[in-house]
Length: 158
Image 1: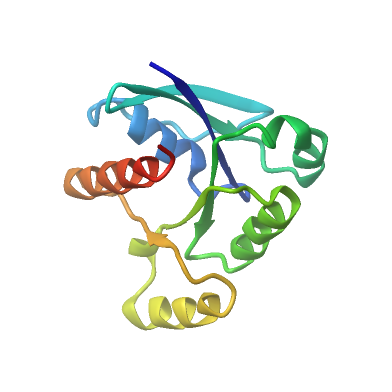
Image 2: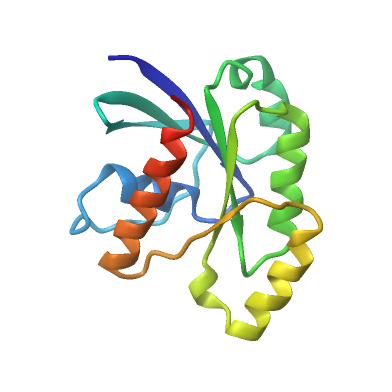
């Protein structure tokens, strides 16, 4: 078995820790929102491969300081918030700083905006990023979809 480092990056309050919680805990374990200071590492196993999911503090100065460490990651996953367009810019800043070879962009909280706002949001971001995955996970079925989407992303690492 090997271990892959996966950086989970994005602005504050976009849902990074909550997504990691969903991936690494049973659905009946409740989540308590918190601010990550530094890096919180959680283990995840998929197809008999171990992954270290590194939920990283979003302060840009921290990212610059940890740059050489982050360069060793197998993949970066950038999380954005559909209710906060500025989170796209922050994710793109992180991307431009790190220039990871393998990455994915998840746009979280899509369930919190109405259909027209979602269309406007997607229109805005389409000029900046072409490939992304829309995420919301308020129900068990959507949690299962998140886990399936995440596993599909991991398939691209190996």
